[in-house]
Image (cartoon, rainbow, N blue to C red):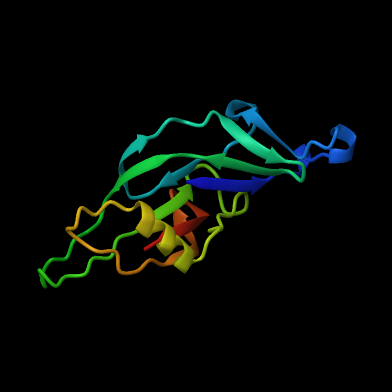
Length: 150
């Protein structure tokens, strides 16, 4: 998962710093978004990247290698011709929608193409489609933005 945000307080003019346009800093030196997956049951992290990548215009990028196990309600009344619809909802637990707005960086077709590359189905099922949506909802007693993948 790649997460990008802007922080204009850490921008600089490359001409003032020997033409340096980007740097890497340890994660603990800067704010990181507290993103969670609502349907998550189990998470396996790959080797963590201890760094944030920052460009001169204040864009910050954080990379995470994740393997997720999520809840998916199954409807098998039409088995073996059943079609399942599962959700992966990304949200912030701490920040409201006035503090942080989630925007999917890719549209549905780009996410679908990437998902086909990395999805492990073991031949038991086939990924037919994928939809990316941004919603303003109420979770945990407050309004927040979510990115929803269905």
